[in-house]
Length: 328
Image 1 (cartoon, rainbow, N blue to C red):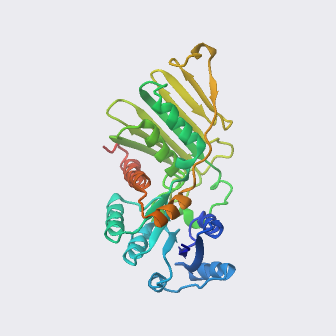
Image 2 (image 1 turned 135 degrees about the horizontal axis):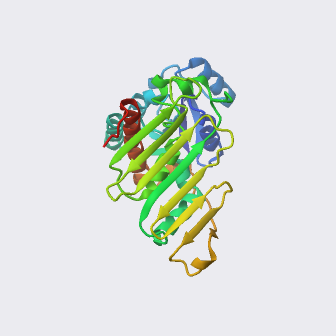
């Protein structure tokens, strides 16, 4: 079955990446474009040799469009995704699903009521280092997890290569945290392996934008374990870094090489110090998983649950930074 797809907006910096995935997948065809910026949308449609629709409703009314890829501004995700669900279109969307948990609940309800397949782009869940860390944690080589730290930062604001609209509080719902910080947020929560009961956030405004370009969030749990999420647009040589610490050992990744190092009191060779752990291959991409769900009439249950929790944590972090207090 060939799945014909509509592209909803080229607002996001990864919009063309998903276009490429749709073009390269043997079972999908990109067949239409709508964009809230008509000039940008027409230019994209022309380069793709597909129709541009002035009205989103008109695109969604096309019976030969089976699914849509959503890269619209974050603040319109609710309206766009609900409209797509009601039109019976399967949905792939850039994170976050929406800026608030209330909006996300409305989206999920519409998706369920209309029996469409929703998948959210959370790409680092599928990377080999994540899969390998999960395997090590399942072996309990670290004992009880006590501390997780994940950092992701680049120089998009200081070197001015991010588009100006990525600094719009209205469109984005935030800055470095809600964009780049999504990845360390969902990974930190994953590696903690338990409910987060408190969130405390601090934002920095190095380049003077209306959204933060430097952010740190602390996640608290009932067990006493702590998670630290770091993100920024103002760093030139900051490696993507993961630390997972427990009562019996520690995992380190990206310090700064792309290697996973383990030291555990439970290892047979514990006296030999740090040991490099071979990384698993990457799992298929979220886009490929979405196509499989459409074809096999299955649901991305875990992906969606992770994405819902991501919005809950992001909303709490934004409240914490704004109100200068921990949000429970």
